Structures are given as structure tokens and as C-alpha cells.
Image (cartoon, rainbow, N blue to C red):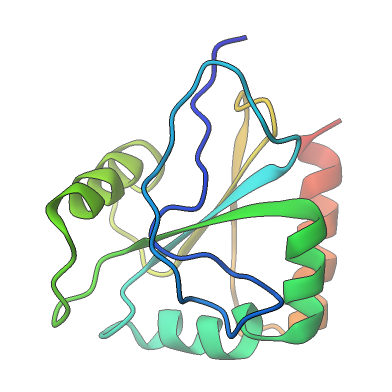
Length: 145
């Protein structure tokens, strides 16, 4: 099955490092190289209070980082207001938003099955990292069955 594979867009959550530090381009391919579910985080990193809180509370949590490293390919589609992103990154983020966040909701958290055939929106309601990981596990089980 032909699918769009999203591999670490603007930042990568890396449990060995301090989190969002690397910038990479989205890669597209017809052959999936990862068996992991994609987790897209639509964020307004310098203006969205909920996005900033989600990053600090969940994405930076060691338990979440460990879970994510083993189970997810995380893609952060950032839409900052004060920080200028490279044109190609802006275009990639806009393409992702057109497909997975057309209403412009922030933060918006989207899981995409490993084969790219299904997606689900995950609600963030100020859960603890452990509660959020538990919710993600339930979604992953449904999504990839």
C-alpha cells in the first residue's frame, strides 16, 4: 500500500537529549521504513499556552520519552508567531495541517497508523504524563489492530 511516511518534521523528541532540538525535513516514500505509529503534534510553540504546557508537562517527561522512543515516530508541526521558520518547513507544516488539522486547533494531537490508513485525534485535557501514555496505549491498540 502506498503511504506517506512522516519522519521527524521540525523537531524530534529524543529521550537521550533534551527534547526538541533537531530540525529535519519531512521525508516521503512509498515504502514505509518504520513500523511505528506516527504522532503529529500541531503546536504554536511561542504563543499557544496549551501547547507550551503540553510540551513541558508531557513531551519532556522521561516516562513519555521512553514510551515514545519505543512506540512512536513524533512529528511536531510548529506554527510559531515570533519565530521565523525556513520556507520549506512552513510549507511542510501547512501541508500536514491541511490534511490533519484543517480547523487550526492548537494543540492538536494526531495518531496515524503505521500503514498510514487510519488516524485518530487525541485529546489533551491536562492529564499527567502517565495518564496520557495510558490513553495513547489504548488508541494505539485500536488504531493498529
